Length: 167
Ligand SMILES: Cc1cc2nc3c(=O)[nH]c(=O)nc-3n(C[C@H](O)[C@H](O)[C@H](O)COP(=O)(O)O)c2cc1C
Image (cartoon, rainbow, N blue to C red; front, side):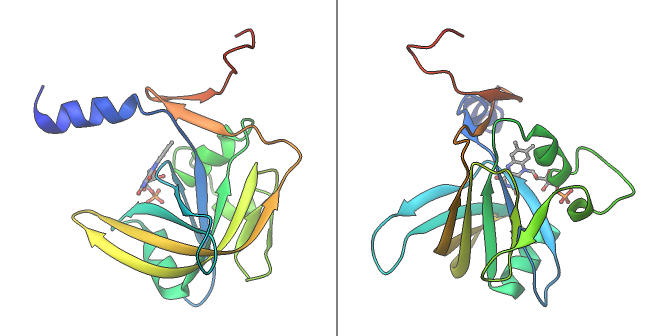
C-alpha cells in the first residue's frame, strides 16, 4: 500500500459525524455533505468551527462569495439527506426541493430534523492543496429534541452505541 492509500484507509477508520454545509446569497444556493466539520473554540469573541471542502465543489465557491454558511449536523435518521447533498441520490428535483428547510436568522438554509444547526459567518479561509479550510464564527445554534448524530466510518453509515448499551 502506498502512502496515499494507507492514509485513506487510516482515515476510513476515523468514524466521524456527518454534516451538510448549506449556503445562500449572491453566490447562489448550495449544499454539500462533509465529514470534515470540527469545533475550533467555544470561547473567544464567539464560538467557532472549521470545515474542509474540495476546491472544485460548487458549494465552496458559493460560500466564499456569500460569506456565510450553516452547518447542519445530521440526525442518525438522515442518511437520505446525506446522500442527496453528496450527489449520491440523483434526481430531477433540485437538492433543496427534496429536503425540509427554512432560512435562518442570517438567511442561510437551516435543515429541519438535524441534531443541531450552527449558523455561521465566514471569518477565515486557507486553500491547502486541494481543499479550502473554512473557519466560521457561530452566530446562532438550534438544538433538536433528538441529539443522536449520523456517523460515517469504514465506508458506511453508522450510529453511536454507548459502551453500556446493548448493540
Ligand atoms: C459521508 C461523506 C463525507 C464527505 N466529506 C466531505 C468533506 O469533508 N469535504 C468534501 O469536500 N467532500 C466531502 N464529501 C464529498 C461531497 O459530499 C460530494 O460527494 C462531492 O464533493 C461531490 O459533490 P457535488 O455532487 O456537489 O459536486 C463527503 C461525502 C460523504 C458521503
